[in-house]
Length: 423
Image (cartoon, rainbow, N blue to C red; front, side, top):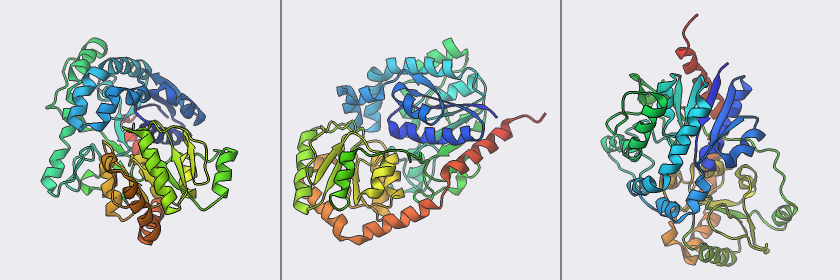
C-alpha cells in the first residue's frame, strides 16, 4: 500500500473526478491525500480522503474582471492574461504542493498543477497525469479539445496537441526558479521539452472519460487508461422541501446550468429563458452556480437553486441546457437526457460538437447567439424530436456497462507494481 497524493486545481469539474478516483484508491488500502483549493475540503473529507489546501482560489478568479476576460479568450490570449493574474497564485501553489508531497510515494496530477512533473523528478517517485478530457496524448482521431474548432486532417490533429507546451510556456521562468531554489534540480524546463516524458519514459496518462463516446486510439495502449467517466456517488443528498414540491407539481423540468461560466448579462439571459419556457409551456430549474444568475422566488414554471447534485437532478429532468463542461456533459449522458450545449471556452466546444455528432444534442448555442427565439427553437426541438432522447438513452446504456474508476485504479496499481523493484 502506498501514500498517493492527488494534485488538482480549478472548478468542481476538475476536482470531483479526482475525489472519485481517490475514494477507490483509499478503499483498496492506499493512503490518499488530495491537494486542492480550500473550498473543496468538506467534499474531500466527506469522502474520507486526507486533505491539504492549495492557496489558489479559482472561484474568486473566475468572478474577477481579469478572470472573466480569460474565460472568454482563446488559449493563447488566456496565457498572456494569466501571466499577470495567476503568477502570485502559482508561486503559492508550487510551495504548497511541495510541502504536501515531500513524503508521498506516488502522485497523480492534473496538468493545471504545473509542478507535478517537477515533483516526480525531484523526489523521485512514480507519477500519473490525469484529466477528465483527452487533451494530453496526441492522436490523429480528433483535434486537441482545448481548441475551439475541429480539423479533418489526421496529421494536423496530431500536431494540435503541441499547443499544450505553448500554454505552459508563460510559466517556465517561475517553474525553473522553483526547480532550482526549492527542488534543487539542475536542468530547466522549456517549450522544446515534452513534459509527458520523464527520464526517457512516457508518464502514464489517466483519462476520466468514456471510450463509448470518445474513440480510444489503439496507439495509446499501455500508456493511456481511458475506461469510463469517473462518477462520484452522491446518494445521500436530500432535496429541500420546496424543490420536492416543485418537482411534484408538474411534469419533469428542463435543468439549466452554466456552472462557473460568468455570463456577460445574467439578468438578460434569465429574462430570455423565462420567456422561452413560458412560450413553450415547459418548466425549468435554473442552477445559478458562479454564472451571476440571481436566486429568484419560485414560480409555477421556474425554480432556482445555487446547486443541486447533477446525479440527483438530471435523472428527474426532461432535458439539460448547459455550458458543456466535461463533468456536466458526462452526468447528462449518464442520466440519458438530451441536451442543448452553450459552449464558452476550453473543452466546451469539443463536447458540444461531440454531443451533436452522436445525436444527443440540438445545435450548440453560444452566448452571443442567445435570444428568446433561439431558446424556443431548441426547447421545442428537444421536446418534439424523440431521436435526441433515444440517442441519449443509447449512450447512457453504453456508459452503464463501463466501470471507469475500478479499471483506472487497476491500471494505476499495475503501473506502480512495474515501478516497484523486486525484493
